[in-house]
Amino acid sequence: MAKTSKSTSSKYQKRGCSYLSEEIKQILSRAAQSIEAAEVLLKKGLTGFSASRSYYAMFYTAEALLLSKGLSFSSHKAVISAFGKHFSKTKLLDSKFHSHLVEAYEKRQIGDYEFSEEITEEDAKNQIERAKDFLEAARILLKK
Image (cartoon, rainbow, N blue to C red; front, top):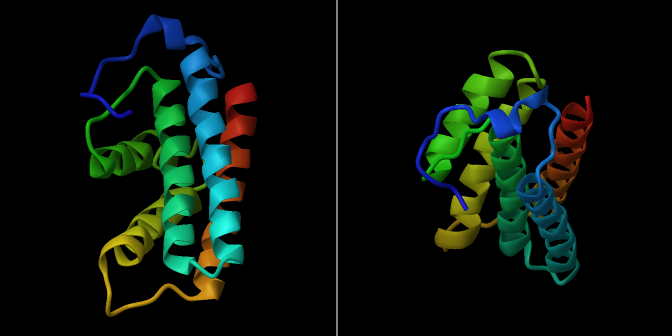
């Protein structure tokens, strides 16, 4: 989904951050689906995979927010960094969401690639709640 950095596009600036293109709506829908998947995986005891899906929910949310400003990036780290720059440092959203996104990225790395370290059930639940909060905050911001 992420692409090379682009300058702000007027089609996403019609009402500032609030313009919801069809693409942004689809990305937010994918974020919501990722949360549902994380909950299903958690119920099955697959905590690492659950944490990974929660991360993707947050990642998609950050992508949608950046796209609302006409911005798109080619890597996960670039999306995370740009989200911090355009939404946390500007105080458009609480900086805790950037911190949660960074931590979720780290948990995803553990859940997907580390075999000596486990994601606990509590960690997975916490990641799901954070993903829900982040998605809700993004939806509110985009409706303003």
